[in-house]
Image (cartoon, rainbow, N blue to C red; front, side, top):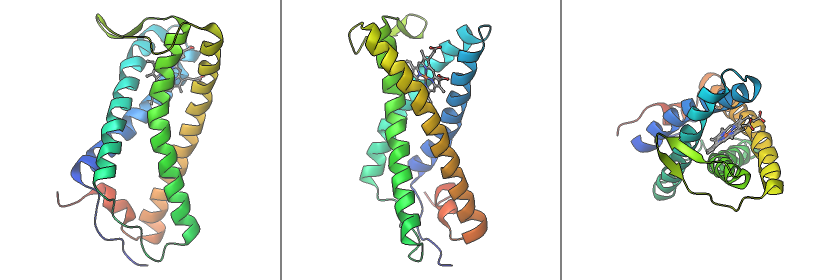
Length: 178
Ligand code: HEM
């Protein structure tokens, strides 16, 4: 197997691994807070600021990604796998940006205060509209499952590169010179 050359820059690697932890934590925090009345107040107070932080970091990550070309995929990677990689990465970027925005818009539409911590509130970004709240609530839940599924496929593909193809794709995100 050919070995992919190059690696993602330091900022890309730090954002990748820290956001991976944050996103997986958010998926579990989300499902636990809707399932447990007891844990809900604590978890929802964590969910809002962590979700907004993911949105801000996703913007920084997109900016870095557009400024620095990622290392090329191995030349002998089947075309369908290269297409699947590009599509799943685009999907992950879209969901990293959409989930926080939908969460923020949903609370705005529901007329809820959007408290980050202490007295720090975010402004409403859409008018108070119960029907819109219902639609965004449904979208937030549904897209969370799509995000979960995409993360699972992404992890599976990363392990396939690491253990089966052994082509350096995993290492490009795991370590580098800068
Ligand atoms: C990457 C970011 C985010 C992820 C992965 C995420 C994930 C989730 C998940 C998995 C659920 C449970 C859905 C269900 O089971 O129906 C949920 C619910 C919720 N999320 Fe998020 N979320 C994110 C960002 C945000 C943000 C930024 C806010 C608000 C500022 C927010 C507010 C809420 C609220 C209010 C609920 C529902 C509570 C309820 O109706 O019981 N989320 N989220």
